[in-house]
Length: 97
Image 1 (cartoon, one colour):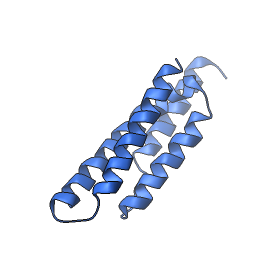
Image 2: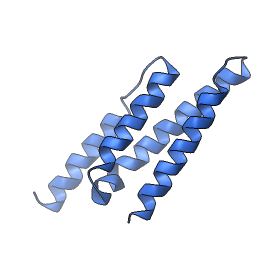
Image 3: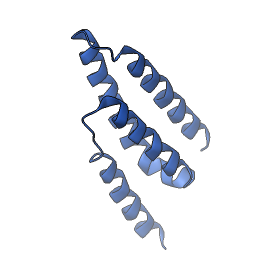
Image 4: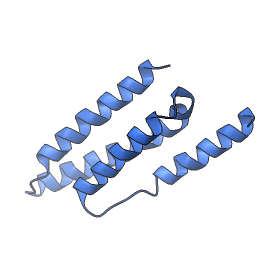
C-alpha cells in the first residue's frame, strides 16, 4: 500500500469517528475509549489521522456532560473521568511521535 492510499484509508476511518454516537453519555464515553484503544494499536502513523477526531468527539461529550450537570444532572463524575482519560490518551499518543 502506498502512502497516498494509506492516508486516504485513514481519513475515511477518521470520518467514521464523527458518526459514532449514542444517546447515553456513559455508553458514548465507553465507545470513544474503545475506539481510542483500538486505533492506538495501529501505531503512530495511524494515530496521526484518527486521534484528532476522537479528541474532538470527546470534547463534545464533555461539553454535553457539563451542560447536563448545570441542569441538575448527575453527570459531573463522568465528565471528569472523560476529561482525564481523553487528556491522558492524547498526551500519550503525542509522545509516541
